[in-house]
Image (tube, rainbow, N blue to C red; front, side, top):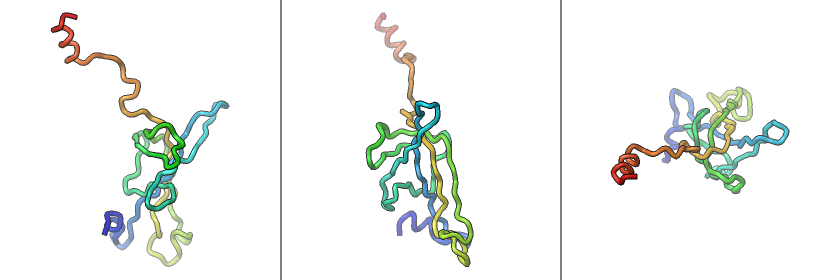
Length: 137
């Protein structure tokens, strides 16, 4: 039994499923608005989504590789999240079922991000300053 199967077992009378995350990369367009491109994540489900029990929160950075190579970076920052939960009586939560047949969906809007140390200044560390002082610079 794998981790997803273990975590999907019955908990409090209801199955717990992973969140199905779809990622969209936001880039500014010439007219001052934004353009959104789908980022397709390769996975065992083959749907381009990330199935996870730990979806990224707004403000967090995440490393994602687009399976089609459409982006020049793998680093992104989450700027917005939009949840979609199944409604009772829908295809994903049929009448007479205790709960949905799959987890909630989450649209995640990201923008390219170079990492937590982007735009780092050229300040010298105390160790570098001490070394230069000792060397007589």
